[in-house]
Length: 503
Image (cartoon, rainbow, N blue to C red; front, side, top):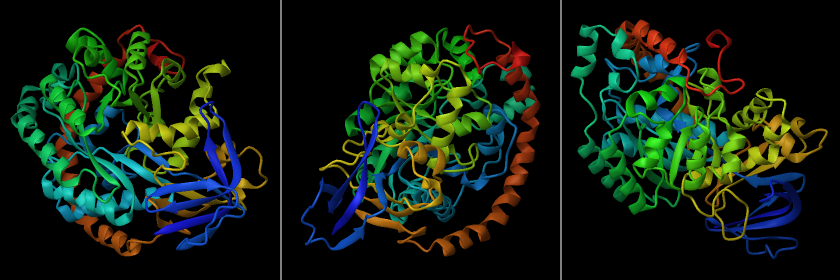
């Protein structure tokens, strides 16, 4: 199958952070771009898209997303991470979902992603009490059916939940603690076997889908498990995906648990490498940033989620200057309530400006675009993805420039970051196939899938409401631990990080 796009403006994001569109034809053969240039011979193309008045840009890459939270979209507000987790990832009474509900939940995220311009996602999937092969099959099938490129994990926690958050045991009574501890932990040996099977069954599927390892966080997983996960990632050239320093409580966690920062702990155990992607990276110290830059690791900057949870703002300029690869993510569909990467870019382009009057620390629109495309692809260990170049994967968007977001037209990068919402997309192409056109996913029946999910939700929410009531018993203790941690002086006072009531 070959596709030709004629006379379009092709957006190239240069290494010097420029965004320079030029007029050319583009030819796709199979899943690759084979030529870009003026007056190409397109006579043998199976399909032609008239690119006049259109912009062709790399598809957006969501570098950190949790599709399981889609069932809680719009449900929670005004909770910090540790309190919110009681309800979205409950200690007690979590439901074991059928593979079909897992499929519908994932399809919902994939549909919204594709229609709003995301062609590639990194989906960090946690199932309670553990992910079954059938549930993982359902996730892969949903992405395959909708037509995204996706890197999908099995997520694990193998330490007792109450031992992953500092100070909580000081406030949780013995009866509640006993209930939580009785649930045990994830089985590291079984999880590693599950991951090995998943690599065999799914890695490279359809040329678009991959598996990755995702030990939850260094305070939530044993070092033996994390090192074994890194060995698997190395063996399969896959990402090692984890969460570090999302909240100030996690900044307190490293010194409390290990006598050093969590980044220093990762470095000491050989877990800070180029294939390591760190979700968040908000409360990093200057020595942390130096270690991360030396490792050439990646971060996923989850700006909307971090704002909603009051977690803080990652020091992106200093991370970039140190050599860290920066990608953008929506994070969970409950903590950001969206998978739309145009919204994420917009927020990322604004948030850093309010932290300091020094404009040298602000991010430019081309830098935001690079983080949302090639930066995300690098974090997922996807070479030749995220840019428009001959020989690279044919993942791209065709955007109508005769729309309100581009009228009147000035700087194209600014329009994409600050004006566009995804409404101007005419075609979303993934792996050389048109997967969505004019706001419609071409390979699934969106209306039927959404209707089926709506039918499933009353029974799910009836049970989840009972689960919420069970876990509410922990909430007061978690609020107390949150306040105690946020009152700690950790010697890191960046503008915009410390609430006034704590200073």
